[in-house]
Image 1 (tube, rainbow, N blue to C red):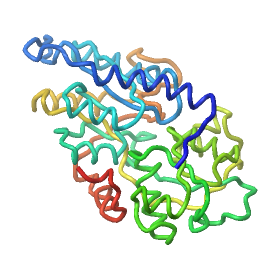
Image 2: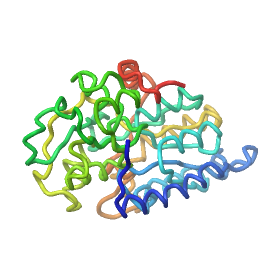
Image 3: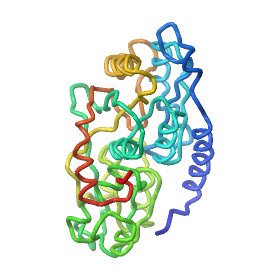
Image 4: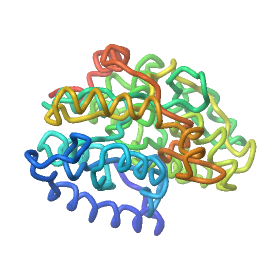
Length: 322
């Protein structure tokens, strides 16, 4: 196994590592001191970047402002370097709210986090929550036509706790006969895994030839990176895609209490969308609620993530074990 050595990735990793320390050290306000609306004086929301960013908080700012107005709480945003940092923070009751990928949500529960889904994100009004993982290579790479050709290659994954950047790709590699399971030992036996740290970093490494192939989620390479100019149209070719994965979601620590959790779910699913936030003056023009460039939040249940649990069984990934 090796990791990316680019200056940009190192700088982002260093910043995120410092914030992980803050995440593990932070704590909520006195639980006996509540706002007029019935919430703790301080709520902590933890997240990791889907793309390498030194200012992830800016993507959440409209949503954070709305939550502060609705709850009367000070909402502290903490960026972690990886999913494990947010999971550990939630288990230790240092994180009240989190934005998780589906896999991280399941892993958090397996490791003892007592959480409830507040809602999953969608890209457009009326859409169903969910997305796909893509297997990618350079458009001119004639030696890779499908995921079976990843065997023996340097392959970029996002993070061992990423749903579309690791778990579902592992299942695809197993089905293609490239690896025997999703364990690190079997992965290394079948290919050389490279952990890029972000979906955009994975795509950029593939485009630059640092990885022969790799994985990222659909919207990142179809839309986000094209619009930002980080990728050119047709620079990468898709050689595999996963089944639909349940959407990334906001969750709450159940230590907040049933009533507070239910009210937070209502706030997010009714008012956590670009149309409402823009109408209320929380943002102008493009209005983002996460760095996944989602339109808004819709209701979600724990059962929606049974498909992720099934893929855990297929892969045998160590991350799926509590």
